[in-house]
Length: 313
Image 1 (spheres, one colour):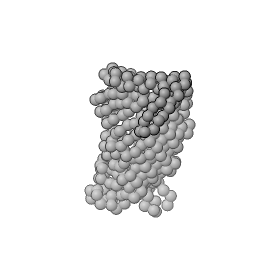
Image 2 (spheres, helix red, strand yellow):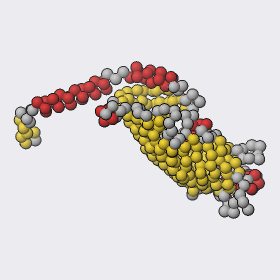
Image 3 (spheres, helix red, strand yellow):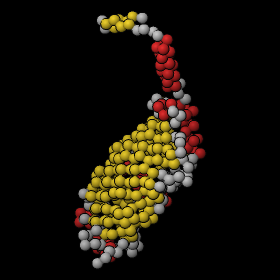
Image 4 (cartoon, one colour):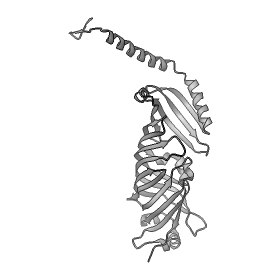
């Protein structure tokens, strides 16, 4: 068969193999287009709501449509966990990855828009060890109301980072992997933290924490902060040996380690008169010669406690 395109003559030799390949390509394209044109949006929406309910979640979706190559797209999503934590998602696309399917593995690619940022990655849905890979860009903590509820303070900053985790399918196996995060222009917009020896907590004014860098290594179900530091703001933070145990309900995962905190004059200038004196008196035994307070970190991930650790004189 001969074609003439843009003044050039092209000759196509229709061998049996090429004919078969052309039919396969046509069938695949027709199948994908038919899925998009006849996508059962309402049925899929109801199925998602039912599946979430089986796991103790409530989910609301404004719009559901076909997305990706073999997936779905949802807009205006709100997920509420059994603990009452509500997470709004502007736009999410999730689709099965074709190549892993060819070797019998189910793997999902997803792209989520939330809090003015984006979270992309892949997640294995089959196998003993299920890999989860994340790439986080530009997530605004100031809009993350669930974090405010969990931390008890209004957080500020923009998060960027990566995660590569191996999540076991069986409960007796342990998670492993690594997480690296950076928070630019981190800070606290307000809130309250408990101070030992004081009847009420310390009311926090708006304060800058500068830039936060965190490196987390997970081995055998234990997550250790190789680095967790905040510098360049009204207060500085350094941690040593800080770790927590990975479990299903991370809010109650045990947390332990030590921290060193130094509060600058710029912070105290924003507080009420006398607040610096009260804090200095309550934490006097834990203040080192370099101006840092030494603290023991206990409690859980969702409910951390800072207790003064006396320093040698």
